[in-house]
Amino acid sequence: MVTTRFAPSPTGRLHVGNIRTALHNWMLARKHGGRFLLRIDDTDPDRSKEEYVDAIRADLSWLGIEAEGEERQSERMDRYNAAFDALREAGRVYPCYETAQELDLRRKILLGRGLPPIYDRAALTLSESERAAKEAEGIKPHWRFKLDHDETIEWDDGVRGHQKFDPATLSDPVIRRADGSWLYMLPSAVDDVDMGVTHVLRGEDHVSNTAVQIQMFTALHAAAGGAQQKTPEFAHEALLVGREGKLSKRLGSLGCDAFREKGIEPEALVALLARLGTSLPVEPIADRNTLIESFDLSTFGRAPAKFDDAELERINTAIVHQLSFDEVRERLPAGMDEAGWHAVQPNLSTIGEASEWWRLVTGPIDRLDFSAEDRAYLSEAARLLEWSEDPWRSLTTALKEATGRKGKPLFLPLRQALTGMDHGPDMGELLPLIGEAEVRARLEHAAHH
Ligand code: GLU
Image (cartoon, protein in one colour):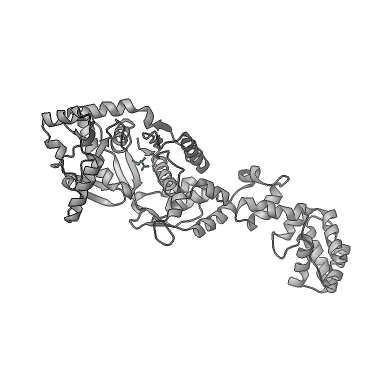
């Protein structure tokens, strides 16, 4: 069964880049009738906050991205310890005693000579007694995973195509700190194995992590007795950038709260992010199944995907125009019924704007000044007003006949007198909502002031 996961660290709110990764993993699982898991990467107790865990859940729920299960790394320390012991037994992790300053200095020397700053594995050459001496000095080791330099790392990336790394060009990654705490790399691989993750889809900033993790998967499988486990498929999507084409700070802090505040519907965000950066057209598709069916990693491009607020707003407007009364009724102003929604919907770019238009029905409206000629015309309108099935139609027909006006001079003064505005919802739909007495009162007020 296809199993994907979204693995945020609860050290902040989700931003539009994370949201996109979550969405794509969810879509990939849905497309194959598989499972989508939420994994909270909370191994760092100082930076992880419960309020962010709650916010991540709330954001996913607002987006309509439901997970089949939730896991927390902080509750899985036993598993990481066991994997660590097994890898150590197999000679795939080793203790290191260098200080951060020493490592930094070595890196600088290598860079100064124009060489790649790869860890030189000095700790591997320590003798038993040298190690004992370090321990006697009270120096606690941190731990590295030993890459197998004889095993070329290769995978067919779902987005980037065939990838190949020479492990000798990579540093053995530190997986555990001297205080026993974990870095991201190993716990993630252990989780992916334990949770049966079949597809790891994430940002291209993880490509070199994947290279290392592929060897971890192999080592973990071997340590588990070579069980019939498969290393997941990997796909790395191009990063999201601002419209200017630059990695923008703004995008890094743009999250669900900001979208909600601007009146962006989750469906609009989903429709945009589902296809941004792919060869499929970005369209205001409110039906998720349509998006899921067309979701295909092979349509993803390698160029950065450009996020444009104006495009999101356009999609949002089009989505708002598709929503049914039942989908929005709870968010409409008090008293607004289906006919009211129908009347204002074409004028909305956000649902929040419904209350501004609804004020044209409930009042008070702006009172405009009219010329003497228009006042006479509006007085005639009040006189000719007759309530019917379609009062707007009968009123304008009668006025046309009586005054000879047509087009703008026929319609505009009426709209202005009845709504206080030059444009707005269809008058034919508004009139029955405003009601006969109020329509008459507004016409008379305009005629006599
Ligand atoms: N917690 C990691 C991150 O947010 C997860 C990366 C992954 O998908 O493995 O970058």
